[in-house]
Structure formats: C-alpha cells, structure tokens
Length: 123
Image 1 (tube, one colour):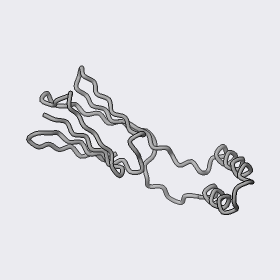
Image 2 (tube, rainbow, N blue to C red):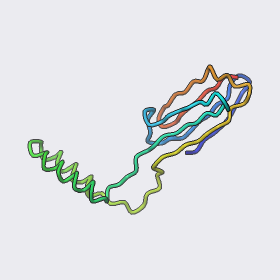
Image 3 (cartoon, rainbow, N blue to C red):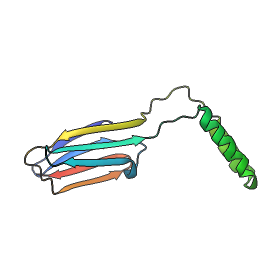
Image 4 (spheres, rainbow, N blue to C red):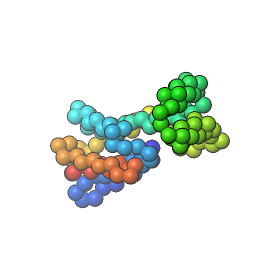
C-alpha cells in the first residue's frame, strides 16, 4: 500500500492508503527490542472464475429456493461476472518501520477511516 510518513514537533505520523479494507483486516505489531512497527493485513482476492467458487455458488442458488426471485437473480449475476481488467491490489501486505529513539512507544494511537489508516506516535 501507499504510505506517507511525516512529523511535527510533537508527533510522528504514518498514513496508509488501504482502500476497501476495514480495521479488522489490519494488524499492527510493535517489537520493543528493535523499535520496529509492522503494519500488515490481507485483502481478499477476487476469484470469480474458479470452479470451486462456481460450484459453491450453484449450491447456494439451489438452497435459495424459498427466497424471492430477485435475490436469486442478484446472486446469479454476481456469479457470471467476468473481469476484463483488474487494477485494484489484493492479497497480503506487510510494511515495517524503525521508530526513532525519541518515539514514545507507550503512546501510539491508530484509527482507520474510509480505508485510510492513521498512526500517531508521540515523541
């Protein structure tokens, strides 16, 4: 993912663009020994053309017999989707940052909003 690092007189900042991800898909780990902050996660890969998924989706459609026709049509449309181009990134990622000596490891804040992770590390 694309990452911006910045600082001011009080804090260090890490901004990571993680489009399509939520906070449950992102993990942060801090190694006290060598002051390394690691941000990792996984965004599931689009895999619409696999036989395994197609068979599972056919079974799901069979089980939908008691639901309305519109729901079945929506599921079926999703199953028939074919991509001519995929530019979005999927899969696992991991980025590590060595924090400066004056970084306060006891006071690190993080928030995720609209696919943007913001980490604030006090000096």
